[in-house]
Amino acid sequence: MSKTMQWAWDKAEEKLETTIDRVRLGQLTQSQAVKELEDAHEAWELMGFETITDVIDYMVDEVKVENIINE
Image (cartoon, rainbow, N blue to C red; front, side):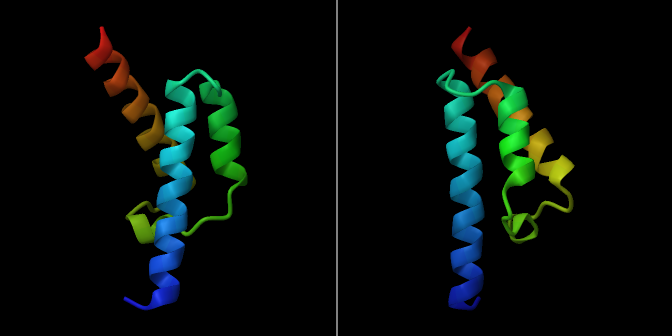
């Protein structure tokens, strides 16, 4: 993988992880997180996502799993 592709992948991964963490900490609502992810111009396809809807579904599922674990 080229350095540019790796950089774009890392950037997309960091954006998603940061957004999920901010939702978990209560800094963002899920609606705000969805808007933030929709507005981000990241290379989501490098992470295996086909559409922004896939990214959002993943984020929502990750937050749900965290809530179940903490209950």
